[in-house]
Image 1 (spheres, one colour):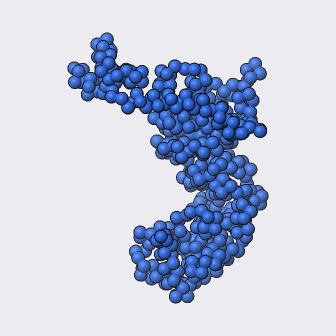
Image 2 (cartoon, one colour):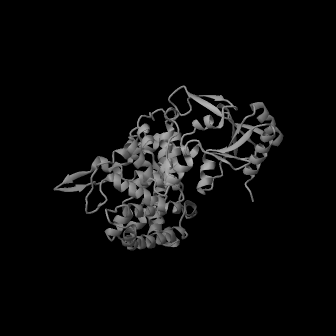
Image 3 (cartoon, rainbow, N blue to C red):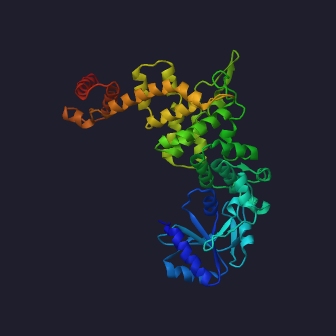
Length: 456
């Protein structure tokens, strides 16, 4: 069944055609269609008729909406369809939205396409005939897997395009053209709002098989300092070669990030998980030191909490996200460490109880282990060597789940047994939680909890 947004686009195009105009699919929809990628965001651009004629056409087809008033973008209620007319933009400030917009329905297709960011996004497809207009070699760049800017002046007017170039490179497995990389070095990113930076970062982390490409490209562009200084600081921080044959902390973090991307579908919070993978070793910048010729980064998982928090808060103030990243950063070392130390069951139960995200803690620990591949090493071999560790952790997690799902003593049970609510109730319930972790049955929990209360 054809997408209802496409059907509506065709109805609009037919009406525009009768009025003497033309309608084109534009932007990412055309790019993804030619690449065989599903894209439900349909954008059309209407040429050759006045705005009032377009308004009249839309009003006959449904309830017209002003989606982006300042950008001249229209829509129809109950449809996910962005409808615009050709426009030119003039930068009046340094921010992403600091533009003066001029709508010109008779501008012409090529001049309208000049304002697009990259050649692969400047393609236009006639809605009725299917003809693709390609003024800047977008199809050739698509075949060559290249992200290339359309126009030097308009590219630098919107600094968000620098991040978008890196994001596209990561997401599509493309290379950024040398001239685009060089031009990007002149862009000023400081005026961008955090939520826009987060938007591009989120796409790189969630849609790319290798999110490391996003950061590697920004490194080439020399554009890490403004928004990702904690990541940039990882460059050149050395590690013990016997533990980390992959090299410095930057190399390790990039490998962990790509491994996390392979595991993110197993996470209930994919974006949070990917950010935690990015932040997990920030603390090594602060604590790495050499003692008797051996490099150490003791307690880096704790030392890095302030850096991780500063990094995330620069992009968002979402408390749940911040808490998640800090929790997994703090405890990411524990699963593999406990297995390596042949720890008792009690230590594993305590570890799982310290995080609201035990399953995802195991995922980040796996990514941390496999993300240590030196030259000539294969992921398959790393995964095979991790299998016994993963098996042990899986057994311990299953036991933890079993114990947490068993009946247990709650506050109302203690009250029914004769205890009065008060300040000590929390301490008694904490004692009960220890009994749960130890696998003590509910009846015995109650006995021991009452004895504990009497001692108090």
